[in-house]
Length: 391
Image (cartoon, rainbow, N blue to C red; front, side, top):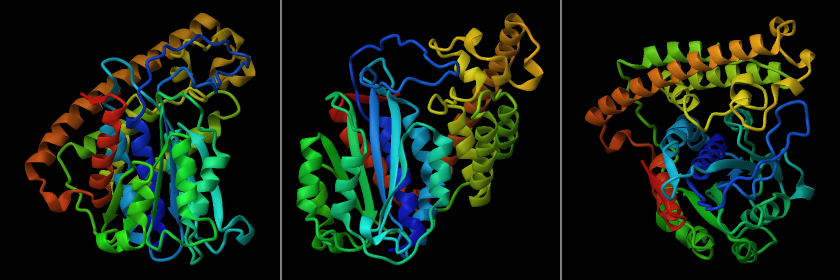
């Protein structure tokens, strides 16, 4: 099982799916902020929410897969920036990550570990993806599926889309828990299981990966996880990267999370750049989209939230240079940063349109990501059932 590849693949997969699924028709209800900090409500029953669990095999031999996942994550995010539920609302995204099949994990837990509970923090999802490491072990697909069903809060809203993506290359039948029991339990909770076999398509069928997906109405996919994707550099890349640096300066950290989250943002920018400059460009485009929201620690995003009340935020939770300012002065400062951010985001969006046109003129099948292509096809097919459309 190619170590890092598996991990990456699933993370991307989940992230992608989450952005595009789940159409719910109910309207949001106003909720009262109980904490001084602008912590988003944990109630999502009244929102269009997509919940995706990525189950990543972190045993040996999956380096190619994880590299595909890391480099294609932001492609998937950007594709689903344009997803709509019906004609109006846009879905929220929550992603969870599990790793399995790693000798460094507890044998008593079936070599399974929850890496990330459901989260809509794209920086956190990226961080967890880059933190994964691999080691040989036993891969129990049925057990990791069952564990994710039991441990995660999937909710009971029938309008939301709930999906599991599991990737690997060992027989789906390994382990004491029969995979059929696990996927049956998933189906009873309206959770769709999608499987990604890293290897030959027919071999995946013989080792029951396809059956694991079909039993819940999910998609079975087989990919060449060792395939290297060629990224096309464009004349607009350097400009977008420079704008990303300016974009970061529009964030106003606050509260106990502020400093650490600002550092995480910078670190994930560096991780993307370390992969390849083109990956950093794609991340910058994602950061200019609606899916990149940091209201838990950024005053600009928090101020735009109807639940946030600036006057309830203690002075010592503000950045030092704002602590002696009046509410009116603080609001003026936030609005200036908000306007600056919107201008930068709009500029990146316009440049990205030119960038995509440039790529489309030079792209062929060899440039398409193996994982990305498989995921997007599956996502759009399943999303159509929930009345999703793309602009």
